[in-house]
Length: 555
Image 1: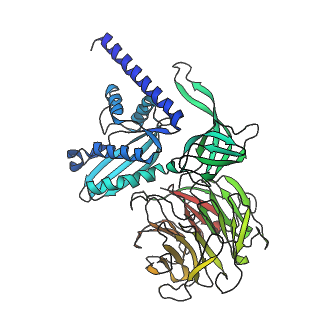
Image 2: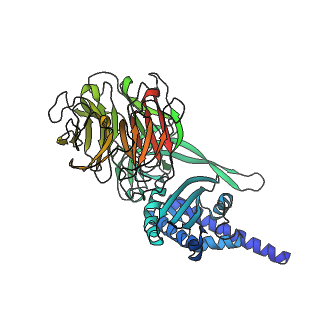
Image 3: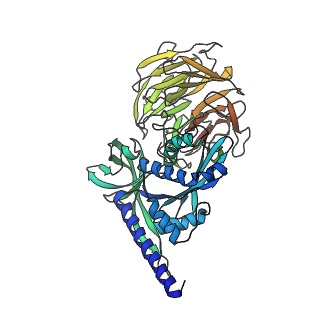
């Protein structure tokens, strides 16, 4: 190619890319959504290459991202044109850095790449979502299937799980009194109780030589919490306002934490296929022995609400402490006592879909209900053996219908209440048979309403339907199961064993798949752990009771 031809071509590419960037840059302000693009995946294996499954899977992924409605998805023809003109190659050669470079040309916030591998057992789809600005892999996940047809059917739920790991973004569009109206609603996953960070854009930072826009200053103005939800709107109130700043119409909002929930009751939505996530890995630990802010005295219970809050039953300090998913202290309430709002040795905590918090106030023989800010709403129960009474309230969870499930370690039974404390039903008694218990400590409820009870001294987890009908017992390798949770990224059951200090991952049929942690005081190990919770964002939280701390694991 002659020099003047190369110059014209380069100029044309630059103008095209600039126009494309401008188009997508404008759309982000109009739609308040991040842009995402899916490149052709690498095809590995004879079948994958012969059927061009890399291109096929990329089209499936593109369609699934469009259907989620959370991103502006870049049209694939425009994407291919830029790849060709930039000579970035074909499927399989677009690495992380190249994908980030391509994303910057396109004006995309995220790029999706990966590979489809065929083998004797079927197919593996490995997906990486790369943040353009940092060239960092934000999400990496795997989907396995026995056939091409099965893979195509699982793409939708798989992408739904990927999308749940990204925050919601929008704007404040109106103010009415103390209520702010946001342009995010049910259609994109907003929920009552969800919190948003509020910020405005400040100075634009440009490269002094090239003039390239490198970023924009973000000035935090406060936090909002959603109180009412509509299809495309959310109504919220200020829960925190920065000094010398004002939350105003036109400010940007971004959800704090992921868009989903365990002891809230399971996530409402489509679960991913079993076996699509990688193993758990230690992420962080926080807390010291003590009674100060962020300290613990033998915390027994924990619940993550899926929107960025982690509630800890700080048992021997007789209080509830709240943190974000990174361990930053947010608030606390409660003190030792018998009055409303006071508590004595609370053993567990749960959160419902409205953000209400339920505390197993164990030594006061009652359940207490609070709003998301710790304001006392009511209580029920007393010491006794009758319906609605408690003797040793050891665990609490909330079902998908809002019903409150409790387990009593001394009465050896499960009791179910509505969210106002009205007794609905109970089952169980002391014994070794199916449906009987000996010192049950924890429980959880899945999205179908099935109840899993850690029948601790019988070394098993028992599964029931919502009416208390026995379904199954899981006993494989358990010694003293103290709590249970559903791993939303896999659909598998997680069992916390206090005796062995292990987290056991079990299939839905009760087969032990693998274990994590072990006894000890170092990071990633436990001493007599009793509390377990998941948040729907691939995080698992453990109340490491004997070490008086919280530990977080993630996929």
